[in-house]
Image 1 (cartoon, helix red, strand yellow):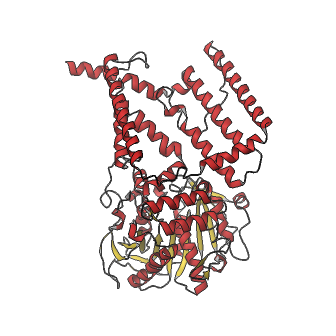
Image 2 (image 1 turned 180 degrees about the vertical axis):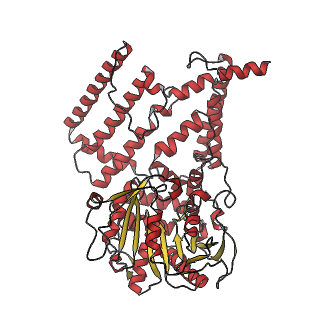
Image 3 (image 1 turned 90 degrees about the vertical axis):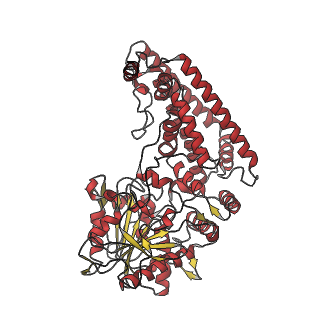
Length: 615
């Protein structure tokens, strides 16, 4: 009977949602929270004291950015006074509206959250007058901060302005009322109704994440419900080649006949290849195999200290060139269709320029998924690229044995979408005390890789900072790289909401390559814009058949001109790409099985490199 009464009580919410259920139990839990918090602080102090002192004090050079901002503000104090006066007027309007609402009147909000802002979905952010005031106060202040720094006059260059705007937004996101117990209605209700159990569980989650990160907070975004090769990355195939940098995977055919020319994919080595093979229903690899392509994928190694000095050219020679040679041995075909995704596409672009200069014609066509060759408008990642930050990064990598540890790279990418990838999990995991749900994409996102120092610094300096490839100032092995010499067919995929490879900068490649080009713009972002299977019937894509990149119909200078005549299509762009590539892939021949050519199989897909974990 007692169990039944407890169950009934748990199912019936208290009349006052903000009342403490059991004061004695609440007090005990708060005491436990205090003890756990003391342990957390003590461990943090010990870990900091144990550090060797080699880490830079300000690795992101935030001090430099805001010192420049303060100097510019000091030069025009009248503008700052006007901004402060505007904030005061906005708050007076908010006070007036709130008072009117408390007296029973109707008042429109002074400020509202953006349509994509998921932080204020709880009903009490609108229905409860106190929390509505807290929300609007925050939004007024956050918007004011960002508008004020954006309007500062003075000697601030474009990159400094972008960095100031980025870090101001990071600060505004961090101080949001959703991130604190007493100012988040959902968390406050959970705390009072569970007698603080959520905070006890949340602190345990926090301690586990810090222990798992060896003293650094590594937020768990997905439950550990996936095993590579068992319920994720399961497309059947074989490893047919291996060297220090790649395992080459060849996937089993599912059609009786295949296109003569094989398809070789170079994913980014910043993450692992199985973004292209998460589950059967959203696997690009399985889908491409089903369209009759013989699919090969380079699975990059997760480098250790022995590979710290591998260069960008090494990735070209031991990655792309080795892959091309191996595919030729496996199929007997010399001209091969290639795909490059993200940094894999950047490497492919540079390699194509090198091959064109050397008269190497092994690549039949090239497809680029969310890949940049021109970095002049490379998005928010540029805020991390200046001389001071690069010097600090080199210092960190030297201290770590010549590698950038995976968790540090992961933190950088998470900062680009902090509300979705950091603060939402802080609230859910640590304040609400919930366990993260299984999510294949976020599991992949957290399965980080290390970066070799020589390769990574070259990439950041020469591409992001100097834009050397697009401006013709890059050389490999004393061979000048000129993208204008690349005249093979090119397919450029971009995504409208991509924050890593913005579609405007991907579009610039239409003016760099000189062969026939097809540019498309997909819906969504850097991942979902690429991994969008036709069966899902999600998003959309845009094409403009007026332009094809040949001399008679070159692409216009700006993507806005291209968009003006573009046609929107519902669903996935994969079919458009297949129609384009099929024409370039030769006649159909009997399907090839892994191991049927000169290369013998070395093991089952997904291989061994993909299972190597990073710190």
